[in-house]
Amino acid sequence: MDGETYYSNSLGVVPEPTPNDWTEKEMIDAIKNNGSQVQKYSKSELVNKEAERLKDREETERFLNLEYARNKGADIGAKAYRNTRKAQRIARRRS
Image (cartoon, rainbow, N blue to C red; front, side, top):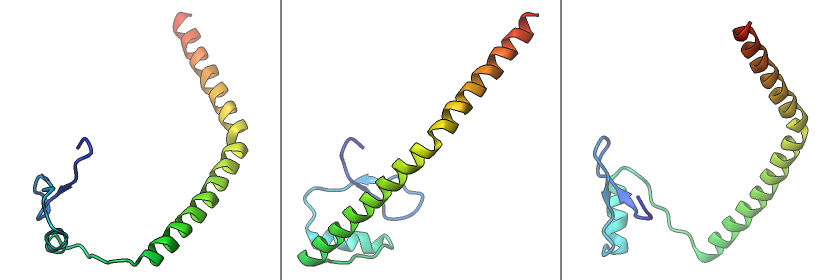
């Protein structure tokens, strides 16, 4: 953990730290042997994917902010309800 990358050769095996001295081909072979797929992207494809990701992130942020604003009153009400119920339980125990 602590910033290290791990890999495993099969399911159920404890992952091992990825050697830092592997070449690109060795890493790709290890990934393929693990049952995963490898795809290479050109620089223009990477730029397009990053632009798509940023656009999606903006839409997600907007959606989450709206939902938070819509539910804020409900959250405050739910918290007040929980506190009231807790106070009632405590009062019943004392009587």
